[in-house]
Image (cartoon, rainbow, N blue to C red; front, side, top):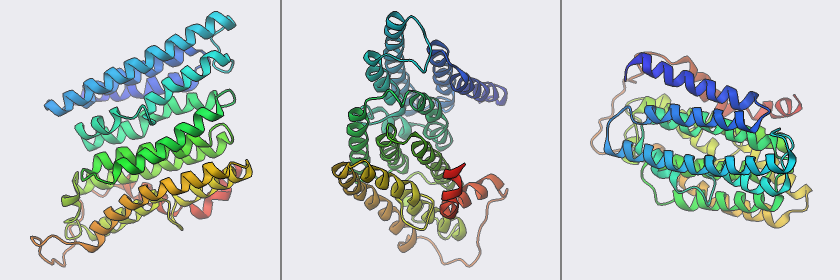
Length: 343
């Protein structure tokens, strides 16, 4: 793709996100989401492959459906309340608006588009879709969290964690595994949204950091399948080691970065006397843990018979400072958790 065109599309992504984040008007927030969607479509199809075109088509249809439902809900709110302010949604439109935003995020049971779309695009575009594109809808959910239906968030959160773990078990494509991982993590974020929005935001920030680190690792290793990741040790042992640790961090194992949000969410659910929900989400997360451990096993304890035991570590020709910083944050933020939560 022409670098000038790519710069224009990325700038449009930034502008759309900024409009949504800074707006107090539902129509402006909706316009920002639409700019984001339309800016990502050419980036998805920069490689003219039938699978990429199919992924872009599925993405467009799903986002258009969610946008139509969102605009319909905002119109109902304007008719009832006489205003478009984001902080004053009516009870009637909150449920439909929440479902529309959750469809944009890819929460279960509106998740069917996410694995297929992520599988059909490149790793770089998948990184944008899994992190940057989640920011505007999530911020809108935070803004209406005081009016959102608790039963809706708990049911969709539990369903997402269960589907995220169940769907990822039989996958061999890393992009699909990351899609189901995203669904599972969003379930953890949503289930606590009504009860503690600050904790939900903390979880979302850590999810973004860990997912970015994982995608950057896959980009550096040029790996999209499990068979390719099993040969990565001879190419770059240091990078392979950090990739394995990032996977364990995504799984939520201590003492890595992914552990504190899960612990704090369970504690908050228990404080709210939601013992059944806490038990169910812990049991459902074991499914997710299984496929993370399977990936870790493939990286650490298997070696392709076609590779030789080289003692030379082949490092990337251009050291990536951002990659090192993100990887460090994805592994070592546990001691800083109290300080982050108090700010």
